[in-house]
Image (tube, rainbow, N blue to C red; front, side, top):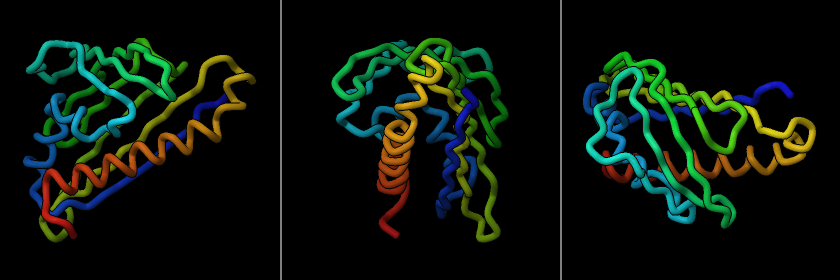
Length: 153
């Protein structure tokens, strides 16, 4: 089964170093994840974010609890970083976070997730549901990031 892509972007009226610092703080993940996922970081905080850092989480998806482990595969502060799943629900999960300075001095945040479901053809049956869930999760994330970093646009 080929991989799928999710791409989102948002503009924030803040300088890139400030926006990058927010996303680089793993503790903020809980605040920008929908509450029904019961997302909790297991790795003791604070986490020194750098290439090779390992982060363990627990969450529930559709009521099913599971563990997720990611590794920071690339770290280029304050431009980009990539986290990849080592253990979790996907056959492949690679999430690239990119931060660029917008012409107005604000920051463009782009997320590109390359993912693949497990179980081959059986997993492919769940792809429409997973796409909808990921779209909802990243939509929630954008709203929360705006609430936490800016006043309402």
